[in-house]
Image (cartoon, rainbow, N blue to C red):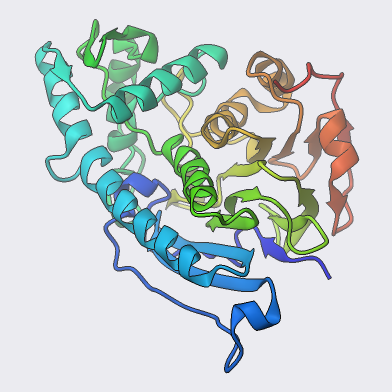
Length: 373
């Protein structure tokens, strides 16, 4: 049997919490050991070992197929400390961490020296924004806040006033306006307000896999609310996961995930505000200032978790008509979108890999995309 981590099902979201992992990494840590009673790992050989951390606004499930349970536990303890640092320093809107201070400096027109880690993160985010024609735009933090998504609770009530949205769009904040002088950062536009919620989770998942590998844990899956990265295999088979159906119940498709790959999904079912029967997704189109409506979910497979995270957002904004162009610009070959009508759009390579678990009325395959780097 394949080991399955169903996206949005096994790693379930915690009600009332935001998708952005930067917002929620301070949550209490739950350590769950699943060890074989009375039999050592050495006696049994490799087996499943699992720990769960409450992070990202969801349960972060870390599972390894290994005969090194002590090394596995030590690696997870180190990850706990790293994630606590990320929450403290890279939170977009709460506390007095590094990212909050940088946003204040930008609003004043000042430059600020940041840690090499944050500088590297922002350089990557800037590159992905440029690759996506700025459909992925972490500089629109003020728009995110205006729509009520800088909160621990789901926003309620009517959408923001159109004039306020138009005023923020007119200021045109963009990642291209960030200026790097080694680790000193400033912006040419004071309206830039950085929010890394659509990027940093994928970055952190890659980091978690690398940390496990450094401790000699070569076969693992790290799953945060359905977004995941893997290394190695689960025994004699690849890791196999299910992709949540964004418009229905259960799993829409399954896929085997190869060593070093990450699978990231962005969907309008994850976080939203609802008013008078209309759902406003947390994914905001930086061109209009309004939440996207034409895509229910976008799933990306890549060896770069941060890229996949950014691309899932960008492709949701691009929609059924433009997603293949943006995917090609971002160097992606394995992409699936589900539009608001339930039609599934896939790249050829993704179409060859996935196995649908439910009847699909329409499957639309794009022209071939360039090979993934």
